[in-house]
Length: 309
Image 1 (cartoon, helix red, strand yellow):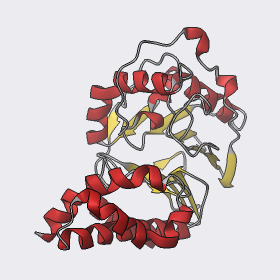
Image 2 (cartoon, rainbow, N blue to C red):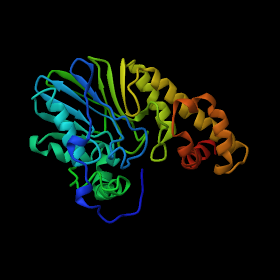
Image 3 (cartoon, rainbow, N blue to C red):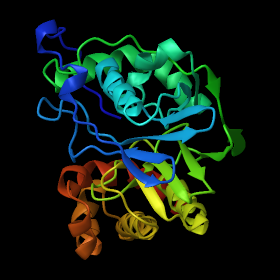
Image 4 (cartoon, rainbow, N blue to C red):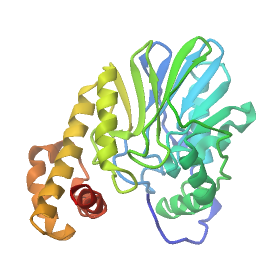
């Protein structure tokens, strides 16, 4: 979760237009498209707030969208990118979780009146925190994300659910709060594509402080068992199933390093060097590690301590 002080609204003229987002859908399997951001950092003026990946699936009866970005303008850019591929309407949207960089673009799709789903815990947070996310992104991007009126999901999914959407089998896969409360992923068994959301980071250090690292490790066992051919992460590059094993090693090593510190009677901040040493070569695969390690240890430490004692 990004928590920043409220800022005065930026000047409207500084807001990015949909055309400013260079979105190029990449077909990763028949009818399945990833829309990948080149950014590997937090929302900023430089990346215009686009720091998270999105995806969509073209079915026989409409389009399923997975995540919509950090603003209405970004959602409009995604809508236009989809329009370059198909003239099918967007009928379904899955918001992977409640962090604003994954759902504030919903408003751009209001005209097609889609079914929009999220986990119920994520939905509750979206309702409570939506306006705050708009302000935070506007501050972080120096006004680039502009004005957005949040459009909340109109349905909740809290159990693994299989649906036939226009002839495409879609499995909506809750994480039990692995990365954040109410996380959802989408599994497409016919094409073996996993639309993961933020339960998978590929070449960017994961943000663990809003979730449950032990549950995340267990969830990755389930995702690995799917044997996906393509993984679209919430942040980072397209990968195959190896990214799941690597991320699990990262999280297990984080947990075990903190566990060692707890057993030695070290405070959380004293455990950071120990964890850093244990991570070894894993750090090379996860840029941004140094920016996140202190907070990752501090927020995971109480869970490890509770598990031990």
